[in-house]
Length: 364
Image 1 (cartoon, rainbow, N blue to C red):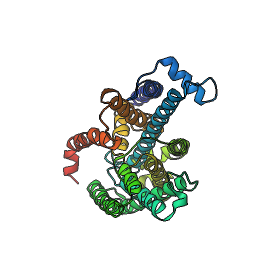
Image 2 (cartoon, helix red, strand yellow):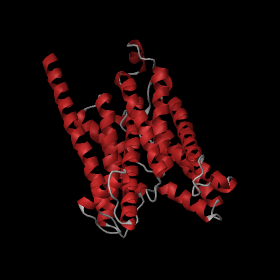
Image 3 (cartoon, rainbow, N blue to C red):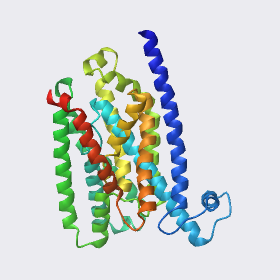
Image 4 (cartoon, rainbow, N blue to C red):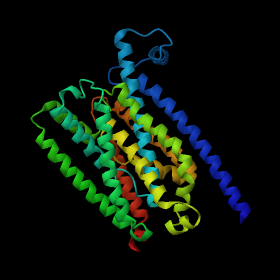
C-alpha cells in the first residue's frame, strides 16, 4: 500500500511538471500569436519580435503605426493572461477553502460584487470627481477603482463564509443558493446604477463594458494590476497550500493537526478577493474562468494545492487569452466581449459538473 501511494505521488508530480511546462509554453505561443494576428492585419514573426524588443528599449522600433498596433496587441494579450490567471487562482483558493469544485468567484457572486464595487467607483469618479477621471488618467483613479472592487468582493465573500460553513461543515446547497442570491442582488444594483447614469455617455459606456468584460484599449498601468495581484497570490501559495490540504478533512480534524482555521480562512478569503478584485477592476465581469481552470487541472494532476494552485493560474491565462485569440483570428468582424465568451464555455461545463455530482447532491 505504501509503495502504491509513493508511486501515485511520483506519477502526479511527473504529470504536474509536464502540464506546467506545456502551459508555460502555451503562454509564449499565445503571446506571439496575439502579436502576429488581429483584425488590423498580420505581421511576420520577425516583425513581432522586433516590435517587442523595441517596446523594451532593446532595438529599433517599426514604423509608427505598426509599432503602435503591436503595442496595443501586446497589452491586450498580457491583460488576458494576467486576468485569466488571477481569476483561476482565486477559484482554486475558494474551492480549497469551501472544499467543493463548484466554488468559484463567478458562481459565488464574488465577481459580481467586485464588479459592482468597481462600477460604483467609476460612477463616482465620472460624476463627482472630474479631476480623477479614468480617461484623464488621474493618479488616484486606478487605486480607487481597485479598492472599491476589493471591498465589493469582500462584502460578498465574508457573509458567504459564515452562511455556508455554519457548524464547521460546508453546506453546498446553501453555498450555491447564497451565491445565486448575491449574484442576483449585485446584478440588480448594477442594473439600477446603469439606468441612473444613462445621461452620461462616457460613464454609461464604461459601466456596460465592465458588466460584460472588456480587454480593449487597456493602458499599461491597468495591465500591471492583475499581474501585481498574481505575484502576491503566487508568493502566498506556500503559506496556504498545506493548510488547504488539511482542511479537506474538515475544520475539526485540521485544527487537531495544528491548523489555525480562522486565520487560514481569513487569509484565503482576502487573497482570493484581492485576485478577483484586481482582475475585475481591469477587465470587468468575466465568469467561469475560476471554475473551469482549477477543475481541469485537478482532473490531471490531483488535488494537492502546492501543484494545483500555480497550474490553475497558468491554465486560467491560457483559457482566457486562447479564447480571445481564437475569436479575433477566426471571427475578426464579430465583437464578442470576453465575459460573453467565457459564459458560453462555462455555463455548459457547470451543468456538466452538476450532472456528475447529482447523486452526491441528492444526499445533501
